[in-house]
Image (tube, rainbow, N blue to C red; front, side):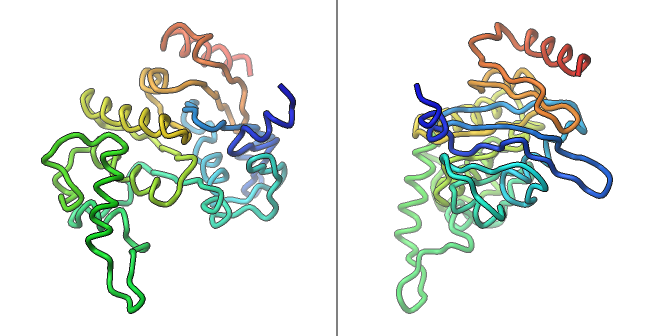
Length: 255
């Protein structure tokens, strides 16, 4: 397989990216790529630089050094608008949802479908929201587009945030600690949503501190330490979460 094809296969590639804040180097020549239709698990201790890497990936920060490559083409002056135009969406820990509002209003908030005179196409939005939540895995007949987000469980709220990202034409969805403080049952719901995203040939960057969760859902693992990508490996080469933890510890100690 040619190098050119491999580059085109990547949705995004960070190539030796460095980000500094004053005299502190938060990212040091970090390289990361995400291919179409895969789930990548990003792991590392607190302070490893995961937040800085995520914010650089989604355009909140522009790198001081290094390259951002989108589908094989280098992008200059990287920012949040260019990241969204590239199909990169983030679901942060707080999910940025409005619990008092319905699922449909949360999905379309700020991007409502309107008639020429400004009136909202409410029926079309409801139909589209119902399609989106079924597509990513909502199966309960008790939940529909007009259900209040405040009545949903933690895992289901993650699903609404993911559905909103898909509505925004996401090709890569960055999930920041999506299973934090969730029960086993709710965690499985999130996993089901992620797997349905993958089935649609979209990609997920899954950031988590729970190695068991990251191991269960990811196709590939990237280990970050003190702002550097120190190791990456495919799941097929790691037999268990315990082995992944062992590899992470050994890599960090030797770094």
